[in-house]
Image (cartoon, rainbow, N blue to C red; front, side, top):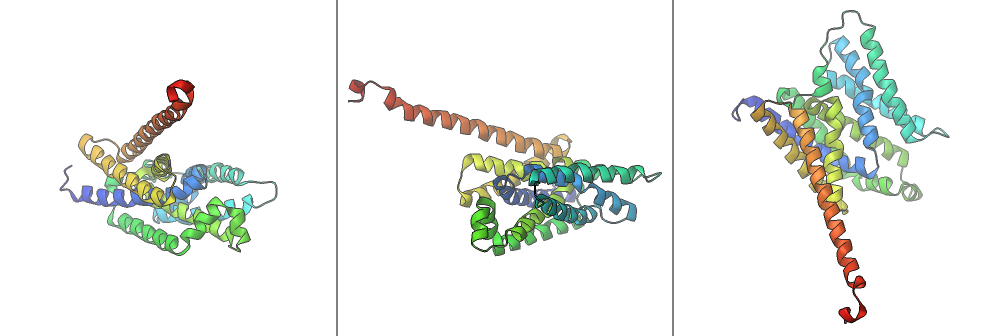
Length: 284
């Protein structure tokens, strides 16, 4: 496979879009501490995938529609007295995936190959997949342009947001739907198992490099795009799984940033402690 191949061209466009999308939305995932929810969504949408396969519909459309139901259930359950968001997410993860398994096992002769959904293949994306990803990216940009500040305020200070009269429940739902549609867009490239890598890794890496929100979004998007494009290149050169390549590169970049942050922190503490540790005469 060469760089002149149209398959590679589509893969590069898809990789750039999902990399940027995962990086930007991932900042909200990190700020709200929702990596577990993002992972749960990739598994809880499985019943929608199975139903779509049985009906001959687009798999990702089925997963996306069922994902909205999962988001509604999580939000509703988490607001029940005595329950919390993590518990609701755990139930959605296990219950959703179990329902999908039951649906598959109850259909004699079920032969639809769901491998593409579970592990993804960015080199196999179609023009339709590109259109879906572009549509999701446009929708995310529009939502963030309209209520991005409100979403950030509700993420950092939900009590303050409520005091200002903001509809925090609606904002929470909007944010979770943004994450859900991003998961649906990323799945064709990385699969359900690895999609969380692009939703967590770039933003977590950016958080190690800076605490400023104005910096987090572009840095996370840039890391996501670079890792996704590099993963496609590695896949095309050595004939290995593109989704796994992207996820591994995201992990590698995070590891390097973590080590760099640790070294900088230790050096900073050493500089701060240095003058205080010297004798009074030496400092004079």
